[in-house]
Length: 277
Image (cartoon, rainbow, N blue to C red; front, side, top):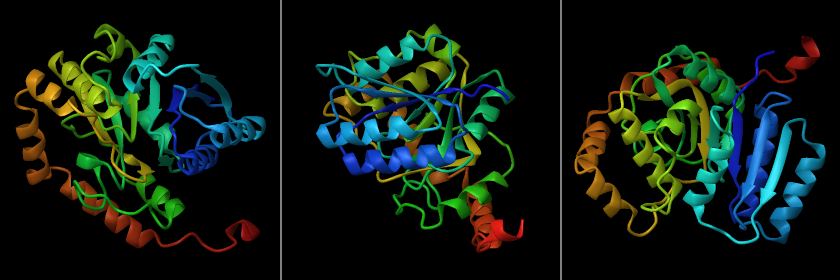
């Protein structure tokens, strides 16, 4: 069995989101996958109890670290990624709900083309990679297993995105290290630092792509910290025009509609199918 990328989950302050994320991660990720719960002094007593309980029963190869004092979202994640060396790392948002097959399909995507530096999944709150409507925030999927089966039937294509998106992204470790990692000096939020990293990677000839057959849901979009958008605009003056052009042109429209059709056609999972297998 192949070794899948390391999964990094930065622990947040929302205990309910953490509980839902860990449950979905357990259900949708192959046994033995390496998972790092990285806590920048965010989890409170209930969050820690959720982690402790999950760690005791998970079939994943999980580790948990906690800083005594927070150093900030971007600085902490940059330290975690640096500790992973050249390993490819899938970073999940703290409120992500990964659907079955998400990590295998992301890994297939990265392996398919050595020029791909970042691979992002579809999401209900995925900005440029949002489904079923681009740039909109939809509720969490009501039938996640059905959606996962529909996504798995999508073609293994990897169209370009303006930048990677923070709900779920697989980073090629060797590419990230060549650029020196995240810029924790200029940005406070992971979503802004990831956009900056993506643009630097693209400038060096790497690709930031959508993995069209993987889906990770999320409760809402990531929000930049104060000053992050100004910092992005100063460094990348054409960024806002670029993302606006992508949202208006919607080059992923056909793929998005194809996933809608597959979801409609595949229907709900057959009741008690295991009894008749």
